[in-house]
Image 1 (tube, helix red, strand yellow):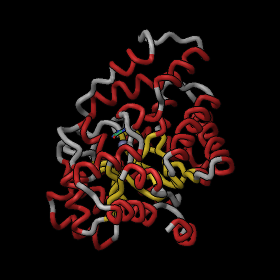
Image 2 (cartoon, helix red, strand yellow):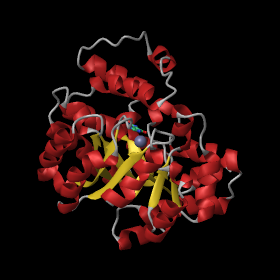
Image 3 (tube, protein in one colour):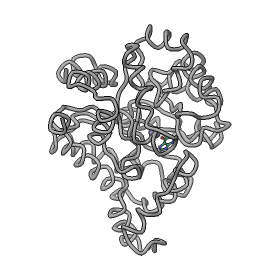
Image 4 (cartoon, protein in one colour):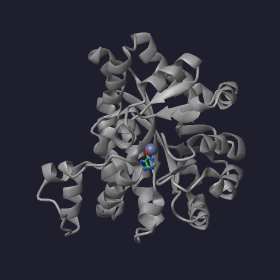
Length: 324
Ligand code: HPA
Ligand code: ZN
């Protein structure tokens, strides 16, 4: 089964590029910029990855990315992920980035987006991995800052497929960003957002995302199972969910494998992704292995997960068809 999973052509749709920053590259970037990290080495840094909730994870995630400062840093970060993706037979990836996590500490927007874009072009030419960018707003910042970021992104509109919403969900519901999402839609961006697993008001947040905002898909969203009516809406629209089993195991009490199984049985387009692989210790292949182990998924079921991922990918029909 391990070999089957390794050989399966994959599509990754929920991956934060800042969450692919491995300790080794963190140390290299720190050296590049003459920064001292508060860890003796790679092992000690990994040992400090002791989160058990979304906020405790986010603290370490934001602390880690302070070494990202220049265009080559963002290029190196994305190239490292895309090389790993190629090794795991990922053929296509939609990659989240968090511009406000960088502009808020003085790194210009264009430095971030140009570095990432250069890596994507090179990976497509040299590694045969195609990828697009999704710009996420940080939901624990003001909606006005998200709007300013959206406007700042417009000169790069052709380089960015859509927008997302991430960071701390508590007290930051989807409707806080209704105007931002409306403008993003007018600008031609596709729309997704995190509805993280087992958060306060999880079902109401999913309802807002689906009905008030009208997103094209939902990141995580497993709690939709608690509302049959919303499941039916998602089925009717053919919407997809980007689930992240190993991530779930870190920020909640379990991988939510049974929930994922149930969604598959209901016919929802579920996809399996890695979220923040450098922090959760699992890229997409390991996520598929973990879920297969928990649910005894068959080869056909594993193939279906990847087929559904290509199906809900933000690609033109003829491009998708070439992967299917
Ligand atoms: N949820 C919310 N914010 C995030 C995540 C996540 O899974 N990963 C990186 N930022
Ligand atoms: Zn995520």
